Image (cartoon, rainbow, N blue to C red; front, side, top):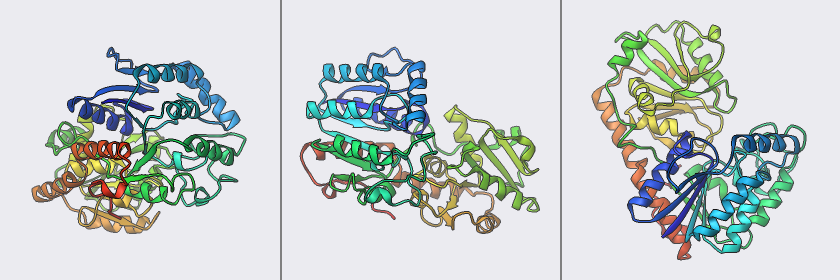
Length: 416
């Protein structure tokens, strides 16, 4: 089959890594694959095509912020995508994140509708089921009619205008008449079934995945502990998220470390910290962004407990990566985070309850080999790249055959 994949990134960020793994799987199965992506490095392969130039992406970003009509610009990149789609003549298309200021979403959908090609839209966030926001948080207006959006200053940002109702109608018109299905993790799929935009379309529930073979597996953390000056008697707590970032909730992690200052056996490591180091308590080790995934896996392996403080997630890849490296997780019982694991591999507390988080950490000790092995074994039953890719491809085949999502093996997608 001839298959096109489109996403903001390729082999970068969590969604880009998922697309990279999915592309490799499809090619191993003998399919011809064209990967179109918005931003990132250029590749020599003619089947890996970056659509947007840096300057056009910046112009799109600015116009979106000023007008509120995010996803409606980038004429050059969009023309390039449409020309390549027509020339390739795909049998099936998988769309990842279309926000990111690199393509006109509605012209892209019009092209795919005209070609009558089946489309699986992957829901790596909530953008395609809402009017204008990528995460609805506790707002339920997307279930009927978006208006007076409380998140217009969130990404994708609108500085002045509430365009949620307008963009919701544009998406409704874009989907109408298409052979399209939507695939997301259990939390997102459940919300999609309530969305006025998506509830009439096939919705596939599939756990996400990480590369457990080549990247995220338990490592020997002794050298990293020595590098960071962490003694063997310390219990390591880890968070991986950009700080400061409202949605990722890094401020709660910093507050947690401050609340545990008297607990001398605990040391807190934060990867992705870009804040003022003067505000870090003595038990806190700030680490900048790590692009080297092999090194990142060493941090996950070193940790005795991974803490996710995000306010809104679908199924956070950082949690899946930690579990795959043999590290139990904890976090707030909010959005899609608690779908990552059950006890004893995952423990979740009420949102913003620092005292409850501290209590979990007070009962956290150094990982044993059996804890590492059992946690990884659990992760491998749910978050295998091979399984995810098979199920994502099966969703596309089901759409081609007009099969109902309930008849497709979605693995552990029924959890939570």
